[in-house]
Image 1: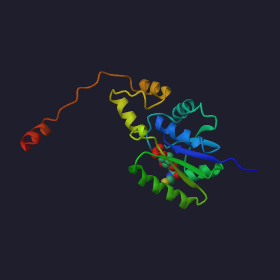
Image 2: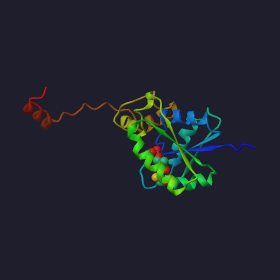
Image 3: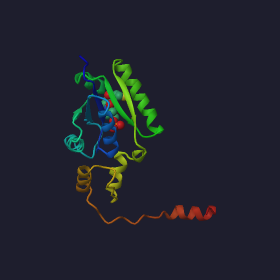
Length: 184
Ligand code: PNS
């Protein structure tokens, strides 16, 4: 009998974005089971706790019956072995992602040769989205509806309540240099 293939989609998911959801959805159409796995990293300060990140991901992905959400700490390959999975899913948005992802895939192969990394290319509409850009936008009073699921949007609003947008500060020194240089 054919064994079900379980894939692990690891990440910080701080918070999950529509770009992540797109990758999870495509992975779910290929693999029997996809486990979105949130990294618990005590050395890196995150905006949302692991529980919050998991619950946002769970809510956003509840429409996909073969996608589950969990968390892990330590080495990814050790986690895969515990989960009895040999497949890592990573999304690629641009060439600039590739170098880091390539290095990580080779490192993981070195650590665990039986594990394979599969890359899924994003949809162009998500190519500029990242959790950090979204956090920055909210932190400084901006707002974006169509790049995160509604539950994440709500939590970002709670975490970063809207304020009066700040007037962009001009840099007098920069202005002066511009005039001196005669640039248009
Ligand atoms: O969403 P991110 O932050 O790009 O995800 C990075 C992640 C979680 C996949 C990566 O940092 C990771 O696997 N961390 C666990 C520690 C580990 O196994 N490191 C060795 C891989 S190079």
